[in-house]
Image (cartoon, rainbow, N blue to C red; front, side):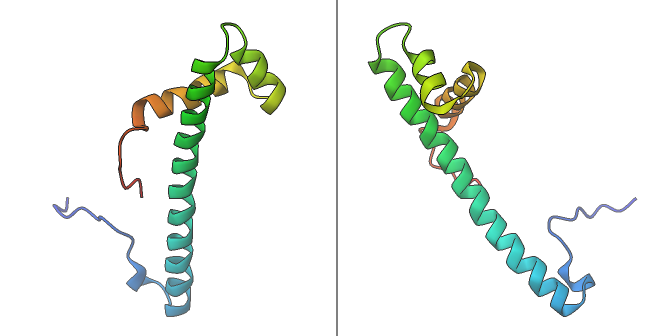
Length: 92
């Protein structure tokens, strides 16, 4: 068994055109994933702020009416913000 651990994809094993296409796609996808993570955290931040501001019992009806979102989905956004919202990380 080899002691070497592959940390990246071996683009050299591909034809040049395929390698260029795959590398460019990887960069675009990484950018979109980063934006998606940032958007999910921001949605959680917004939901957290509104939940704190609404009277008790109004948050879930607001969620259902405005977004057709389940309570579980809203809770997932809230948890992501609670866990990662204050961190300044490079996600990708």
